[in-house]
Amino acid sequence: MNTSSTAETGTDGGTVTRLLDAAARLFYEQGVGVGIAALCEAAGVSKRSMYQYFDSKDEVLAAALARSAPGHLARLLPGPYDTTTPRARILGVFERIEQTAADPGYRGCPFVSIASEVKVADHPARAVAREFHDQLTAFFRGALVEAGVRRPDLLAQQLTAVHDGFFSGSSVQGRPLRGLATSMAATLLDAAQVGTSRRSGTAAAPST
Image (cartoon, rainbow, N blue to C red; front, side, top):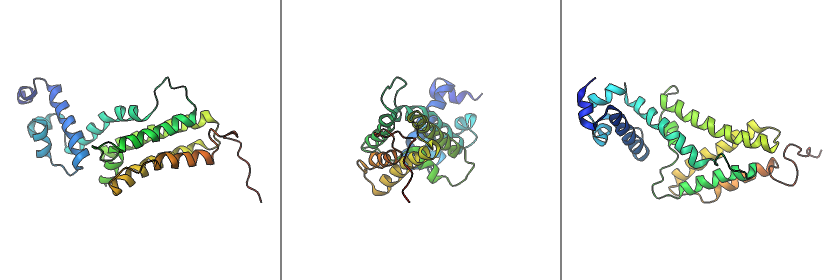
């Protein structure tokens, strides 16, 4: 083990933490084009130290994104003891999305941004982004199953698409699209009769 990394941070684990902290901040604020030199300078470590723990910048990017995923999900999803209705829990996610977008430091969803910037299909960071979206979709599906929706898989994917589209759209516009994500999600839930007076899974057949 190279002793220079220990000298820089006090512990080897500190080197990794500083690299991931710097990577999360720089990639979020400036995009994936940030170079290794700038990353190492921001982290206060040498390139040699970085390569002790990661084979490439791509690995650092994926690791930083993976480390942020649990916290990001925890901020979006309801807590384990939430006893509100499935509709309320789903719409609460979109309300929190809009609150996030209103923050002055908002630069978009890191998972949507990374997936858009990285063009290589098997890039490790894209795998992390897909896992995040799979977990978000799984939450929606679980709530929709509880609500008795007839086709929960499709509606869960549509809700995830609203999440992605809202973050992409607000990034393009350069401003939060207030109320849009929640209203779009509510429209989808209304169409499936989630939380309406009629049962979700017993929608009337269209008239002929």
